[in-house]
Length: 109
Length: 114
Image 1 (tube, rainbow over the protein chains, first blue to last red):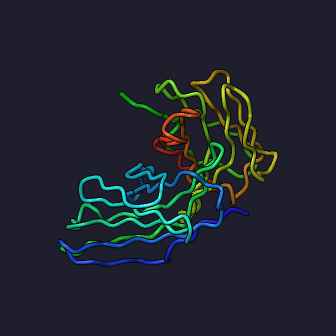
Image 2: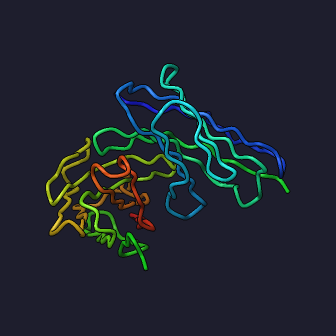
């Protein structure tokens, strides 16, 4: 059974701080990993994808993947109130995404 | 331009009724999905079609029947609706083999069974 585990949260950080979101996964065969952001009442929106070990940066977002530890994380630098949302981690294999339960981030002004 | 669209957006119905949800994508993708997101926000895959062929069928009651008339459309028919079917149903699409399974989600259909 493929599983993706995320810290239950919620996570609260002050505006301008770094928010660190973590995720572990069970399927060693997965080649692709994703972070989706979901605002309340909206659909999941892809913000980062990562396929190889190391860091991948896109603006204020950095995804980190460690396949040996089966660990993927998302760092959000200079957090803004508009970053307040639920963040879903997912692993992909054979056209199937398995999602974690999500963590709710609140950025305090 | 809406990439993945779903109708209806909201659906309120009585237990025991039969209802359908429709999904269309204009991204040129060949793979489409149905997900269910429960009240605790857990997002779980139900079905996936690739070029009109069913490729993923998770443990879903057979009251749920997907149909894909062409690769741009995927519908979900639900028979004999139960209270536990109340959830948000998301359609998604991707292109197999391209950008390694990146999936794009529709706006969701909020189903409430009374």
